[in-house]
Image (cartoon, rainbow, N blue to C red; front, side):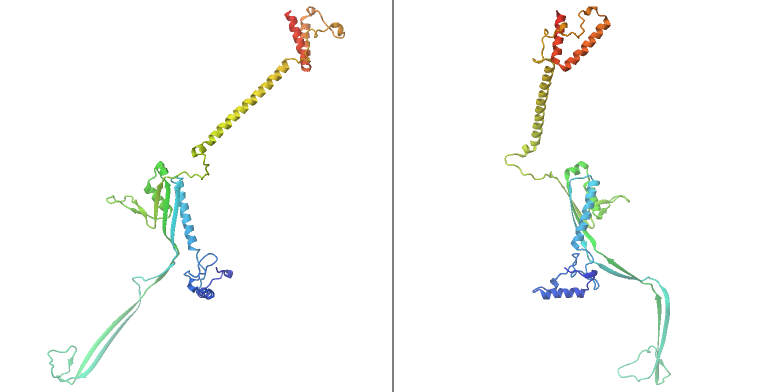
Length: 380
């Protein structure tokens, strides 16, 4: 791995020198087998760079292809989930990128142009010679072209003329340079989709394949059926110009995490274990609530019995509850209640009721004995 300071570049001669240095230092290693890479994992020694460029102009080819394939896969997954409302599917993509850079120079000239200059040249050549006698073996039977005999003179004259014309036109030329960067050459897409989901949603396989290809950036091949009217809508042939799309409808299995199973338990009993656990918990809660309720009921009943029945220690028989006037000289007794007026009788009843209530709070047993005495007197 080679790292330069201040992002300097290496020329091809410097790269070749490094390869030869490493080859000379390591036995049995040829210079062409030495690969030099930069900090971005770009191969410098194998890159088609100019003399002024010594580092890779792009990232590693594998990284670029993986990034493009990932983007294509994301677009396809978004189409399947948002447009076709599918959940169970898998997408595999494989892209091929052409990393060759092509430079093309084009020079064009127009058909017509303005006349820049016109030149004409004319020349005439004349020559004279003596008349020769007829040689043996030849006989002249016709006049020689361009031959003039001067009345039997001793000389002949030959004349020739030549003319030429040159026209120069002013033409405009256009020079165009086109540089093509790495481009996506081919894309292969495989989609694994749940057959049941396709049937439930009523998906047309032709339109489904076309949508997947278009979302991957492919151009579908369209054709008009034979015998169709003019202006008819072309139909999808099922293929693409710059790639292939394969749809694999399958039956998806439930994705369950593997669980270690006991040898003594079957899968059915393990799946129903939570039901039995819930039923047992509810039964235990009901029994516990019943026991607690029964205990509360017994406690409440005991408290009521204690409040209604006097204890043996505090119980006073009716005979002992009789108050003798001589024993309480300060107490105002009215032995003859029949001589009391009605307002006095009501006031006395109210007073006795209040006193009995206070007595019941302080001494329930004594209050119960007084009530029992009154009941006995009324029965007599």
